[in-house]
Length: 169
Image (tube, rainbow, N blue to C red; front, top):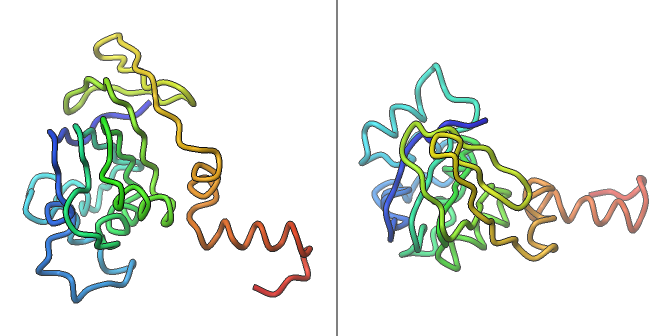
């Protein structure tokens, strides 16, 4: 069971997720410290030494809109964040898949900060509200990339499977 770390409304842009003033910082090992830097409360939670094992954010429609900056997804991946949203901006969703960020499309989700959430293959269960919400599944190929941890680990798995363990990657 997970607890909702933060609740967003609609149209959360990549500039809110990863502010543009940090665009010179691109290394995945460095970007996480700037996640939601302008939302002090959330940034402190994510960067706390008493870090949550798996932070969970809930969002409305169009999460990740705005620019195509990959850092918006990598900064969240660096914190092992799970994002449940009514829907995602197209480019953000593809960047998230490529990086292995766990994104869940749940068009009818209802949740508030601190609600207790369970995630199954097909549903998000809000135990605080005692309600269940259907997940819109990703195509199998996209889900396989996320499950592998991103596009690069997925490509490695495919190459090893096709060429055997002696494949140099």
